[in-house]
Image 1 (spheres, rainbow, N blue to C red):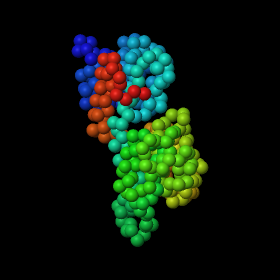
Image 2: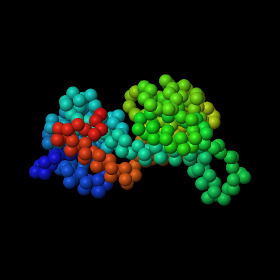
Image 3: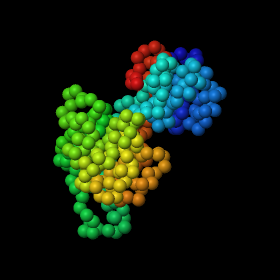
Image 4: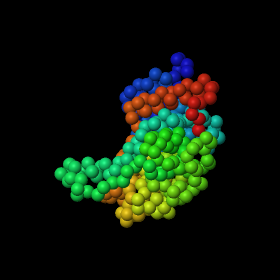
Length: 312
């Protein structure tokens, strides 16, 4: 990138001071997580790059107000609310942070799975309240069970590697079977759930995967089954999940994502057999720093007319 005039970057998501300093070394940064409409109205014509994420997105209307826009990037892996087709029709380059947080998300998926199966939060609360194990139900062993993975991208593959350490049999559902994967392929989430003891959801969000995990899938997992979602809240039918957990037709769940974020999932918070975290699976200080560096690398390629590292 030229050191004379830095390209103007519009940032639509909250960042740390360290992130902003890092970006300021390469861009003229307009940081507007709060006042985006006003900023686009005022500065749209001068913006050459946008940094957003899958949840915050970027609309077709906003793109049209930025005639000089050359690059739109999602900081994480998700990009469900970016107007991709519209951006492509304008010749705007698109990138995401695919793979950068995959280890962190896979770690968190296993943490949620273990916490749900072994009732870690419930046992923690009992212990603090002076309740000893004799008064509590025993919990199943995770090792040796069947794990179904919905969405076998980089994150799904890393979850499979971790689960192999627990000697779990691995099955998966993906839009298409993966080459060179030893895990067993199932052509529907329902067929996978019928086979699985535990189901981990690691598929992209968006219209195509809306309520992919519905009542039928939850019923197929059954009263000894466990569900973990580290993808997007929209992939799981929250109402159906609440009913299954309340009635005991599903054994337990661990969720990092919800429909209606950031509001807590009202149908789920009162339930005993669920572990909840606030959409943190992909976040850590090292992941955040790596994601910012990855976006800068993509932008550097873009402005040099070179291929992007992780194009959409």
